[in-house]
Length: 319
View 1 (tube, rainbow, N blue to C red):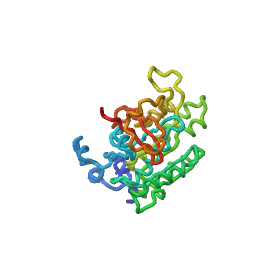
View 2: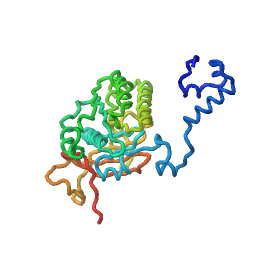
View 3: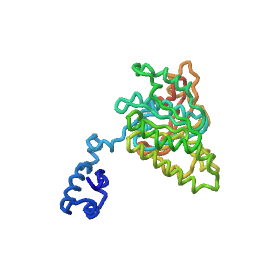
View 4: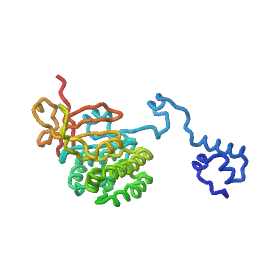
């Protein structure tokens, strides 16, 4: 077209008189053009039953990424939801990175949405030795390929590198269909160091903008985005509440859809009543996994342990 109107979505966003001024078409012809284009983009009517039976538009269908543990998956009602941001928070050495590494392997073995993973490190060096240990434990499940070849690792030390990675590198991998999972470990590191207590407004704006990009990628490509978060001291915890809370405050809490928290147990009594058949010769590290909020799972808490093969939920015996 001489008017350079080659984008169908742009044509639909313009008014009929504007299109008429930019082209030689009459108002009747403009209306007919927009009607034909609208049929291409408007979804067919559907209801909740259609979504339940997978008959609605595929972009509305969330899939769930397994944690590689049946007990944890039961707590999460199937796993981590695609198309949104899930936060994994907790104290240092609570198993946050361990769970993320396990997800990077799990996504490659997903039956319906197999693919690679992007792991963005903003804190410590990537735990490559631990990853190789997990790969050796699970390589027999997909012997035709090396699970490590499909995990793309990026180290970032400043906002410029992080934003270039998220805005440029990630879309390239996603467009090629190479990635089905994004992990950022951790989102708190740069935001806590770069801003002080007098720059809360600037930090809030930056957090919102950054989260908006992640949400767009998660929705557009229907993939899970996992963000690791640090914790801060809870100075006035209510009775029975945790002594720590996720960092970055209310601004960040409003950007995420699900929050999972790992913590160290305050006591270990009673673990002898749990089903620990798989422990055998290992000396596992015990933790607790809490679902703080999620659109698909109720608030819950389970005991988990970490050993050489990964992180596992502990199912209680039915008495």
